[in-house]
Image (tube, rainbow, N blue to C red; front, top):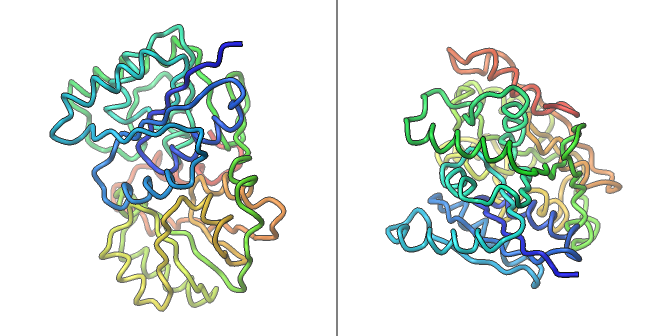
Amino acid sequence: MTRGQALALTESPTQLLNATEWWWRHQDEADLHAVILAPRAERTRLQLRSVIEELPDQIRVTWAEVRGPNRAIILPRVLRHLRRSDTLVIGDPFSGIIQFLVGQFPVHHDLVVVDDGTATLRYMEVVASGGELVRWHQRNKPGAVRRTLAARALSRLREADVTLFTALQLDGSGIEPNDYAWVRETYPEPTILPGVDLLGTSLVETGVIDEDKFLIGLAKLVRERDVRRYFPHRKESTAKLARIARLGVEVVHKALPIEIWARRDPVAGTLLTFPSTVVHTLPLVLTGSGVDIEIQQVPDAWYVAGTDESAKDFVRRSAEPGSA
């Protein structure tokens, strides 16, 4: 049987991890070429390079500076890879570059969407409701060019044979479960430490919750639960993290997605997390380890004034099993 050629277009560490998990399940059927559409954020770039170092040798990786001054040279190279592939794997249908590239992909070929945090939840909502490809927290309307790109990509996604490879508990056709088999087979049982660790959130950076109110609530949580370490989200600001460190917790910058970190490095026996898709992924990653994962809900008082109810509801549902 002829082996297929799969191309993964990834822009974040989580997307790259989940594309690897997809390949791990389908490695007898296809080779994987992961093209990193390099982001601008330095912390994300560093995490991507760290994930690349962990990948199986069989995965071919290309680093593409599609946002740099040589974009006009590099994008056509990516397009050539795209047109030679039988399967396209993507993680963020809301990315402008991804939307452009998806619009160029042959409609009769297979297309896989892997988890990328809340983008997955929002994508499922759009598909179900027939809405536009607009992020759940986006307040400003996109311009004409972005709307055209999004509409073309969404049309292609609806026409193509799309599989959603996900750790979320979803029903329906075209759903393939991601149980993080590669992570669990690659890394041994984690070392469990006494105490409590807290997973960070970027809800302040996305403009949904108020920083001062968040930090007041966080200080109370640190005192009441004796939190020892805080694992920031890669998008959290340096200034905010400095304020968190002054609460008396150790701010630990992860070089890898939490799904890898929690297997590879020592982790506390209790993990606290605000609403996030790690509520869905970490129980799979840490199955049988004895680690307890507790959800900390976001109080209404934390939300920025003017936050609409749909955004608040989205945050709540992101932590619910079977959400979307």
